[in-house]
Image (cartoon, rainbow, N blue to C red):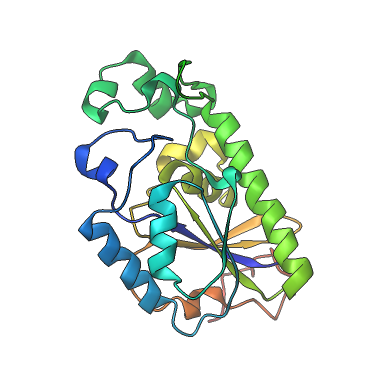
Length: 230
């Protein structure tokens, strides 16, 4: 099936303030974030993007407008940030003092964010299922419309992209905190009927075209014994 480039939004005002922005309104890009998005635009030179889908949140929409200015973009809530509930808007320093922090770090599969009257809450496992399922469904749509060698872009957030990477390497939600995804980074994943395959993770520089080649000597989603021949 197709290859997805997972683009994390650029550095945001929430990142600058050190807060867990979640689904808060009015969280946009900083000057650094806008520069990161411009870098992605240059990195995409030579890549034919079949479809672009973004989280509906402002920081992602601003990122994709700069990174792919000539592309039609649709939004999909399945690519949205984790619903942090009552943790939304908390500083990371304050959150680190909460007992839930250690659960998130050590046993993310059992971590559920506390409810809030203002913001929805979900578990990390629910978030991962939502995002991974969404990426698989969107990828199938792209493959059906554009073919098995198509490349598409999904613009999302740190934890959701980490969930896809953890799935691709077979770690699942238990491996969520073993993944790093920086603002403005691009991760490449080949989605196949059998499994996801990680092509590159957390890249912040260099041309993206070499990362999206489809293996021709064996089935998509299968790895060459001994490693690829280049």
